[in-house]
Amino acid sequence: MKILIIRHGDPDYSIDSLTEKGWREAEYLSEKLKNIPAVGYYCSPLGRAKDTASLTLKKVGKEAEIFPWLREFQTAARRPDLAEPLDYPWDWLPADWAEEDIFYTDKWYDHPAMAEGNAEANYKRVCDELDKLIARHGYVREGRLYRAEKANNDTIMIFCHFGLECVLLSHLMNVSPMVLWHGACAAPSSVTTVVTEERRKGTAIFRMSSFGDVSHLYANGEPPAFAARFCECYDNADERHD
Image (cartoon, rainbow, N blue to C red; front, side, top):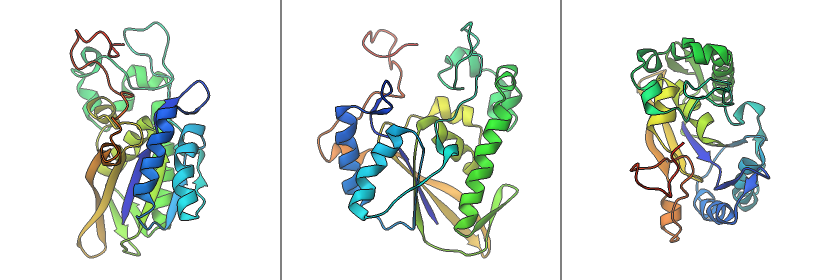
């Protein structure tokens, strides 16, 4: 089984859609995805994800199932350097999380800031729904592995958001999402590929074969958007710092 996790194109958050650049990204993306046979298309209910998916769906003549749990992941975690809680648990400063051992474990949501935002319940809800979807396609979660009830080479596509993507990957690969939120960057319209590994009959685990692929942008001379990135050097005044 193969899962393609696709981040929406460059967003215009003010109207929950795409910028002009984002629409170009979605077009180039659709030219790539239309050639990949898929048995299922699933999408966030938010406009920027639905708009991104729409161009691919039109070209393949399919419709996507809309799942509320694929919306951007939200939990009101109180970032240590801010007075008010954020609606999302990423964008923490490195000095405020990297030395906290709990964030590298499966109990990351027990950190006081995460517990205050009900992170455990929100995270487990998404993971449970993901497992229900994967079970529909033949793989049933058992502990940290999956039982291959109907082993297959099918592909499904999920159109969603960076924060939510990291939650999906964290569950599939059994790692803390805090590490992925802050240690990875999936540019707008990027494609992450996760595939099953079945080295023993009936038992599967998921492995990531590529992360944040934006080759469709480079092939069309379109630079990746800066969204989800921060300053690569503190002196870069035109890059996001906080």
